[in-house]
Image (cartoon, rainbow, N blue to C red; front, top):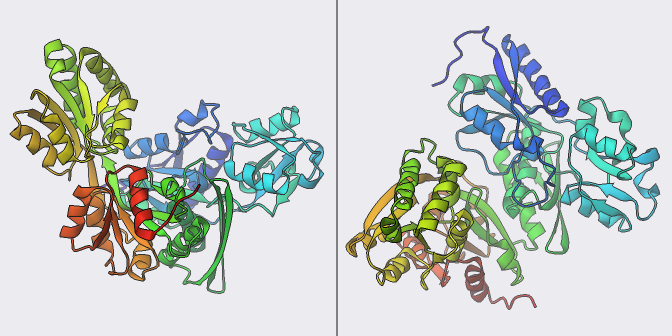
Length: 561
């Protein structure tokens, strides 16, 4: 348990080096200092986002400015970190809590333009610099004759590109401009643009096990700011939004009524939602449920398919959309890399040993049963060490196998050119497929709850299996907002992808007979049946396409095109 040994010990606030980040962190530091009578200390943490010019809309950048700060927090280098709330990934980070959402600033967007022109007065063909898909989509609806180009950089850099004539205009958050004293640059506040979820709000995080600091930070929490941002950010959860998603949301609270407006531009379509809910000022659970209901409206259905997933895992929404099936998603399962890294490091060492002996390498296989294996292993062992070991091992003849194409894709990304995938996409199918191979050594990085089907099946065939737990699977502790939707039959079907998802589902919700359950493969179906669920359809493989076909067959959808 963390303690505060002295009232004179400073509160260490981790922050990026940008003027806006430092200004926001300083405001929090002052508030915490006034609340605790303790000094605060700024700790600069340089993040990868400070060095890149890659547009945030380009794949691979979610949480670009967040992950390094969180690593510093978990490592004990700082006590508190401060973010622009809109920049936080929707999935929480294990070991870290959102301890406070202070009073929210103006959530709106502002136009910065040459000669102070308003949006309506910009000449046709004017270039607007923005890397936000949301802003570009909204402005294009208002002014389809404008040209949009991505730009990155801090506030000063973006304003400078307008003043230097590189672009004719850009759009920035009113809150950020105001905080650093640049509000005079605003040509127009864009009231017609819905902001990003939680724009204008700050998120203050600390370690989950630092009880005294959690209590201190909670003293600057604003219940209304937490309420409205909870509703807005659960829109992100429901549509499984990434940084490339053009989604907007704004909630307001007045006289016991929580109103949420949201917009989504996706797959070439634009959708809107406007919902109102009676709500107590501290009822965050109801606010989250409202956000999830809004995501269902945006998806195009009052009774969508619900995708039960892991935090941070991809959903099957795009494949379902090809069949004209609306869906929402919410995490019921939490995947956390094993931070001690002992098993992960041991498996890396075994890869290196195999790489040093050609005969051994040619009889060694790396096997995986989950798309979460490789990302978790990379985190637990370190990217550089693992990718180097894989490159050496693959060159020496070590081979790879996976239970399905999604898992195989992660192994290819890791460095294996060819990955063996059985016709039956399951651990049982992989054992049967490898029965035709001379028994050798299998390296099996896995989760703590992985079924024994693969390692025990291989051992029965004469294989030597080295196992290592690289991630931990747990049920999310807080009841998901969609659990009520399930119990009230407000979803047309529930899709589960793994036995752990089944366990999480039955932990949080009682699935009525009127809500059909669709399983991604036979193994998951067996777990669902054992849990007492009525399985209505089973996908022939865990691939998104096969899962979507199973749902479409159940619901009678003919598909698009």
